Image (cartoon, rainbow, N blue to C red; front, side):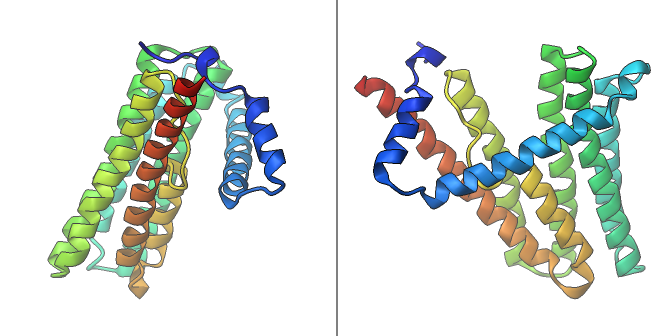
Length: 236
Protein backbone atom coordinates (compact mmCIF):
# COMPACT_ATOMS: atom_id res chain seq x y z
CA UNK A 1 0.00 0.00 0.00
CA UNK A 2 1.53 3.35 -1.02
CA UNK A 3 2.75 5.57 1.75
CA UNK A 4 0.98 8.89 1.93
CA UNK A 5 2.03 12.20 3.35
CA UNK A 6 0.61 11.62 6.80
CA UNK A 7 2.81 8.54 7.23
CA UNK A 8 6.00 10.48 6.70
CA UNK A 9 7.89 11.86 9.71
CA UNK A 10 6.79 15.46 10.35
CA UNK A 11 9.09 18.18 9.14
CA UNK A 12 9.47 19.74 12.59
CA UNK A 13 10.65 16.39 13.96
CA UNK A 14 13.41 16.30 11.39
CA UNK A 15 14.37 19.87 12.26
CA UNK A 16 14.46 19.03 15.97
CA UNK A 17 16.79 16.12 15.32
CA UNK A 18 19.09 18.45 13.41
CA UNK A 19 18.98 21.01 16.19
CA UNK A 20 19.79 18.40 18.81
CA UNK A 21 22.86 17.45 16.85
CA UNK A 22 24.08 21.03 17.15
CA UNK A 23 25.51 21.12 13.64
CA UNK A 24 24.24 21.26 10.09
CA UNK A 25 25.55 18.46 7.92
CA UNK A 26 27.22 19.24 4.56
CA UNK A 27 24.39 17.34 2.86
CA UNK A 28 21.83 19.67 4.45
CA UNK A 29 23.80 22.73 3.35
CA UNK A 30 24.08 21.40 -0.19
CA UNK A 31 20.36 20.68 -0.27
CA UNK A 32 19.62 24.21 0.96
CA UNK A 33 21.85 25.74 -1.72
CA UNK A 34 20.26 23.62 -4.42
CA UNK A 35 16.76 24.50 -3.20
CA UNK A 36 17.71 28.18 -3.28
CA UNK A 37 18.87 28.34 -6.89
CA UNK A 38 16.14 25.95 -8.06
CA UNK A 39 13.44 28.12 -6.50
CA UNK A 40 15.07 31.22 -7.97
CA UNK A 41 15.12 29.68 -11.44
CA UNK A 42 11.46 28.73 -11.19
CA UNK A 43 10.50 32.23 -10.04
CA UNK A 44 12.43 33.77 -12.94
CA UNK A 45 10.81 31.35 -15.38
CA UNK A 46 7.34 32.21 -14.05
CA UNK A 47 8.00 35.91 -14.59
CA UNK A 48 9.38 35.28 -18.07
CA UNK A 49 6.23 33.56 -19.33
CA UNK A 50 3.77 36.20 -18.10
CA UNK A 51 3.39 37.58 -21.62
CA UNK A 52 3.10 34.11 -23.15
CA UNK A 53 0.01 33.32 -21.07
CA UNK A 54 -1.94 35.81 -23.20
CA UNK A 55 -0.94 34.14 -26.47
CA UNK A 56 -1.96 30.92 -28.18
CA UNK A 57 1.40 29.30 -27.46
CA UNK A 58 0.83 26.12 -25.49
CA UNK A 59 3.17 24.38 -23.04
CA UNK A 60 3.27 21.35 -25.33
CA UNK A 61 4.46 23.60 -28.19
CA UNK A 62 7.36 24.79 -26.03
CA UNK A 63 8.13 21.19 -25.08
CA UNK A 64 8.24 20.11 -28.72
CA UNK A 65 10.37 23.12 -29.67
CA UNK A 66 12.82 22.30 -26.89
CA UNK A 67 13.25 18.72 -28.09
CA UNK A 68 13.75 19.85 -31.69
CA UNK A 69 16.41 22.36 -30.66
CA UNK A 70 18.25 19.80 -28.52
CA UNK A 71 18.13 17.39 -31.46
CA UNK A 72 19.53 20.10 -33.73
CA UNK A 73 22.29 20.80 -31.20
CA UNK A 74 23.29 17.14 -31.20
CA UNK A 75 23.57 17.23 -35.00
CA UNK A 76 25.73 20.36 -34.86
CA UNK A 77 28.20 18.54 -32.61
CA UNK A 78 28.85 16.05 -35.40
CA UNK A 79 30.19 18.84 -37.65
CA UNK A 80 32.92 19.88 -35.20
CA UNK A 81 35.57 18.67 -37.63
CA UNK A 82 34.85 21.61 -39.94
CA UNK A 83 35.32 24.29 -37.31
CA UNK A 84 35.59 23.22 -33.69
CA UNK A 85 34.89 26.52 -31.97
CA UNK A 86 32.02 27.48 -34.28
CA UNK A 87 30.11 24.21 -34.14
CA UNK A 88 30.77 23.36 -30.50
CA UNK A 89 29.74 26.83 -29.35
CA UNK A 90 26.75 26.91 -31.68
CA UNK A 91 25.69 23.51 -30.36
CA UNK A 92 26.04 24.81 -26.79
CA UNK A 93 23.84 27.84 -27.51
CA UNK A 94 21.16 25.77 -29.24
CA UNK A 95 21.24 23.13 -26.51
CA UNK A 96 20.85 25.71 -23.75
CA UNK A 97 18.00 27.37 -25.63
CA UNK A 98 16.19 24.06 -26.03
CA UNK A 99 16.74 23.24 -22.36
CA UNK A 100 15.40 26.66 -21.30
CA UNK A 101 12.25 26.06 -23.33
CA UNK A 102 11.90 22.84 -21.39
CA UNK A 103 11.92 24.89 -18.18
CA UNK A 104 9.50 27.48 -19.53
CA UNK A 105 6.90 24.93 -20.63
CA UNK A 106 6.16 23.96 -17.05
CA UNK A 107 6.16 27.58 -15.94
CA UNK A 108 3.74 28.48 -18.73
CA UNK A 109 1.44 25.61 -17.79
CA UNK A 110 1.35 26.72 -14.16
CA UNK A 111 0.99 30.44 -14.89
CA UNK A 112 -1.74 29.97 -17.49
CA UNK A 113 -3.64 27.27 -15.67
CA UNK A 114 -2.88 24.83 -18.48
CA UNK A 115 -1.46 21.98 -16.43
CA UNK A 116 -2.60 18.54 -17.55
CA UNK A 117 -1.51 15.01 -16.62
CA UNK A 118 -0.51 14.37 -20.25
CA UNK A 119 1.54 17.57 -20.33
CA UNK A 120 3.46 16.51 -17.22
CA UNK A 121 4.02 13.05 -18.71
CA UNK A 122 5.16 14.50 -22.04
CA UNK A 123 7.51 16.95 -20.33
CA UNK A 124 9.28 14.29 -18.28
CA UNK A 125 9.54 11.98 -21.31
CA UNK A 126 10.98 14.60 -23.64
CA UNK A 127 13.58 15.52 -21.01
CA UNK A 128 15.09 12.09 -21.46
CA UNK A 129 14.87 12.34 -25.26
CA UNK A 130 16.70 15.68 -25.29
CA UNK A 131 19.52 14.39 -23.12
CA UNK A 132 19.65 11.15 -25.05
CA UNK A 133 20.12 13.00 -28.34
CA UNK A 134 23.08 15.01 -27.06
CA UNK A 135 24.81 12.22 -25.16
CA UNK A 136 24.42 9.85 -28.12
CA UNK A 137 25.99 12.43 -30.43
CA UNK A 138 28.87 12.93 -28.00
CA UNK A 139 29.38 9.16 -27.66
CA UNK A 140 29.46 8.82 -31.46
CA UNK A 141 31.95 11.66 -31.70
CA UNK A 142 34.20 10.03 -29.11
CA UNK A 143 33.96 6.74 -31.01
CA UNK A 144 35.15 8.43 -34.21
CA UNK A 145 38.09 9.78 -32.23
CA UNK A 146 38.95 6.20 -31.14
CA UNK A 147 38.44 6.85 -27.44
CA UNK A 148 36.61 3.68 -26.34
CA UNK A 149 36.92 4.33 -22.61
CA UNK A 150 35.14 7.67 -22.90
CA UNK A 151 32.50 6.07 -25.13
CA UNK A 152 31.79 3.61 -22.32
CA UNK A 153 31.62 6.52 -19.86
CA UNK A 154 29.14 8.31 -22.14
CA UNK A 155 26.96 5.20 -22.19
CA UNK A 156 27.16 5.09 -18.39
CA UNK A 157 26.16 8.75 -18.32
CA UNK A 158 23.07 8.00 -20.42
CA UNK A 159 22.08 5.13 -18.14
CA UNK A 160 22.72 7.20 -15.03
CA UNK A 161 20.75 10.21 -16.23
CA UNK A 162 17.79 7.97 -17.08
CA UNK A 163 17.96 6.26 -13.69
CA UNK A 164 18.00 9.61 -11.90
CA UNK A 165 14.54 10.31 -13.30
CA UNK A 166 13.37 6.72 -12.87
CA UNK A 167 14.25 6.57 -9.17
CA UNK A 168 12.35 9.80 -8.53
CA UNK A 169 9.30 8.57 -10.43
CA UNK A 170 9.26 5.25 -8.55
CA UNK A 171 9.68 7.00 -5.20
CA UNK A 172 6.82 9.38 -5.89
CA UNK A 173 4.68 6.49 -7.12
CA UNK A 174 4.76 5.03 -3.58
CA UNK A 175 4.19 8.41 -1.94
CA UNK A 176 7.79 9.24 -1.03
CA UNK A 177 10.17 12.05 -1.88
CA UNK A 178 12.70 11.21 -4.55
CA UNK A 179 13.99 14.59 -5.67
CA UNK A 180 17.19 14.65 -3.61
CA UNK A 181 20.73 14.44 -4.95
CA UNK A 182 23.46 16.54 -6.49
CA UNK A 183 22.80 15.82 -10.16
CA UNK A 184 19.29 16.69 -11.31
CA UNK A 185 18.52 17.79 -14.87
CA UNK A 186 19.54 21.40 -14.32
CA UNK A 187 23.02 20.39 -13.17
CA UNK A 188 23.40 17.96 -16.06
CA UNK A 189 22.48 20.67 -18.57
CA UNK A 190 25.14 22.94 -17.06
CA UNK A 191 27.81 20.23 -17.20
CA UNK A 192 27.03 19.36 -20.83
CA UNK A 193 26.97 23.02 -21.85
CA UNK A 194 30.30 23.80 -20.17
CA UNK A 195 31.76 20.68 -21.78
CA UNK A 196 30.65 21.85 -25.23
CA UNK A 197 31.98 25.38 -24.73
CA UNK A 198 35.37 24.06 -23.62
CA UNK A 199 35.41 21.13 -26.06
CA UNK A 200 37.95 22.74 -28.43
CA UNK A 201 40.43 22.47 -25.56
CA UNK A 202 39.73 18.81 -24.81
CA UNK A 203 37.39 19.25 -21.85
CA UNK A 204 34.30 17.52 -23.28
CA UNK A 205 35.30 13.90 -22.43
CA UNK A 206 36.04 14.91 -18.85
CA UNK A 207 32.74 16.75 -18.62
CA UNK A 208 31.04 13.47 -19.54
CA UNK A 209 33.05 11.73 -16.81
CA UNK A 210 31.78 14.32 -14.33
CA UNK A 211 28.25 13.91 -15.65
CA UNK A 212 28.35 10.13 -15.27
CA UNK A 213 29.75 10.34 -11.74
CA UNK A 214 27.21 12.89 -10.53
CA UNK A 215 24.35 10.97 -12.15
CA UNK A 216 25.24 7.69 -10.46
CA UNK A 217 25.92 9.41 -7.13
CA UNK A 218 22.46 10.95 -7.40
CA UNK A 219 20.91 7.55 -8.09
CA UNK A 220 22.55 6.17 -4.95
CA UNK A 221 21.45 9.20 -2.93
CA UNK A 222 17.85 8.72 -4.02
CA UNK A 223 17.86 5.00 -3.30
CA UNK A 224 19.26 5.61 0.18
CA UNK A 225 16.81 8.45 0.79
CA UNK A 226 13.87 6.23 -0.11
CA UNK A 227 15.23 3.49 2.14
CA UNK A 228 15.56 5.99 5.00
CA UNK A 229 11.96 7.17 4.58
CA UNK A 230 10.65 3.60 4.56
CA UNK A 231 12.62 2.73 7.69
CA UNK A 232 11.36 5.84 9.49
CA UNK A 233 7.80 5.08 8.49
CA UNK A 234 8.01 1.46 9.64
CA UNK A 235 9.47 2.47 13.03
CA UNK A 236 6.53 4.72 13.91
